[in-house]
Amino acid sequence: MSRSLATATAIPGNRPCCAVLPAGLDPARLPRHVAVIMDGNGRWASQRKLPRVMGHREGVEALKRTLRLCSDWGIGALTAYAFSTENWSRPGEEVSFLMTLFERVLARELQALEQEQVRIRFLGDLEQLPEGLQQLIADATHRTAANTGIHFNVCTNYGGRRELVRAAQRLAEQAASGDLDPASIDERLFEAQLFTAGESDPDLLIRTSGEQRISNFLLWQLAYAELHITDVLWPDFNEAALTAALLDYQRRQRRFGGVEPHASR
Ligand code: FPP
Image 1 (tube, protein in one colour):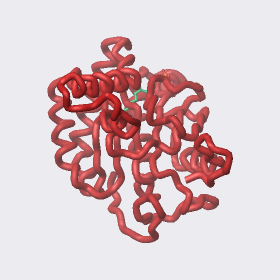
Image 2 (cartoon, rainbow, N blue to C red):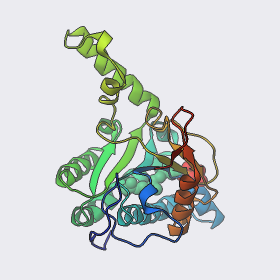
Image 3 (tube, protein in one colour):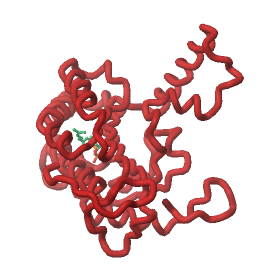
Image 4 (cartoon, rainbow, N blue to C red):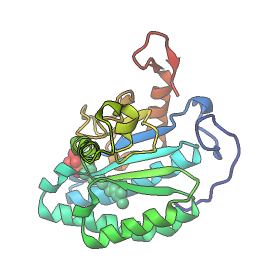
């Protein structure tokens, strides 16, 4: 992040947009919240006969590009799947590299995120992360909490099923202590126990590298998301690829289980 944000046209449901949108995109029908499964880093590196970790390093550049574009175009939130609860089973060297990468990137980019008014949050079981990373996360979360720009959520040691079990446990504890009537539990109360509490659900999920899976990502929150799967490997994800995803989204008719077509938004 390096360019500053100026304000111009207001897009309903989104933040004021400051940059010219690519031709063909309707500013009034942008998703409010975009989620991304950043897949294909390893394959990107293998294709170049590089170590897998070089793909992750390049993946950071793609993430920064995507965040800047979403911010410039007035999209309200970007949620990225950086490290799943299953990713611990990768070779130890790769896991260590990723943890160090998260620390370095966070330390290096925090000032720019603050200046760009990005509000960053890390979603997942953070207590299992290295101590140094936990401290950086706490600092970044605190320092950007009042920022008014894009919400940038980084899912780290995140698992959708674990998130649902955790929410159920928290509600059960409240019920057991007499603070909550089980009959009063509804979707609103349940959502309030998720890591994403307070965030709107993603309207669009983008998955790169062609795999057609959800992979334990945002199982509750993606209930009505439109899915865009592209063969582009994550490190190659760029303005053209994001534009293609948004154009695909704007071609969809969102029905939310009903029969009357709603324009995508
Ligand atoms: C999946 O590709 C990618 C990951 C598990 C890591 C993604 C992390 C980043 C892009 C870094 C983000 C950095 C910050 C600071 C948030 P893969 O390794 O599964 O690729 P493959 O399927 O080709 O093997």
